[in-house]
Image 1 (cartoon, rainbow, N blue to C red):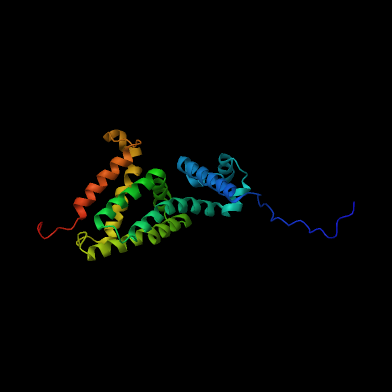
Image 2: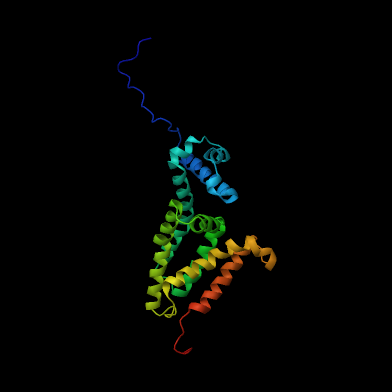
Length: 230
């Protein structure tokens, strides 16, 4: 049968491009990120083979190249997803002019602890890739993402709250921002190591107890004194 001269030729597909809906593509991408995260925590990211990551995600290894480009792109996307989860909430909180300083500090604590509880691997991988490995492309990416993301916004907000006399003015806001972040993240780094020795378990209720503890601690530590209290 001769071809129909009036029929449009089929649309050429990009080589290797999967036929997927937007939701299907997101599902595959998320599965790859989940698999990479699990293996990175188990054995270190450098020890993970891309085929091993793809196998755990139940996709072909070509999907990694398609969605992320290379190993570096996959790793950056893994961290970026975790940072975006907390960053968007922190930005919304800090930009909300209708909350008082104390309420926002309490809500900030809740956001930070809840986000890390959802990604408890994050402090360990930041330590491994950003600190222990020294200078590396991943380490530089982590440092830039943290510093240029919620951390600088938090510092600016703390400076503004000090200027409004909502929180105590004797604290360096840069040190204070690091302290607040550390109160949320450091327990998830240390309890897997020393929790049994001190009788403190990283169980399902621990994030709630940590939120309450940090809120009380920061309220006592940061709240500016009123005229009657001076």
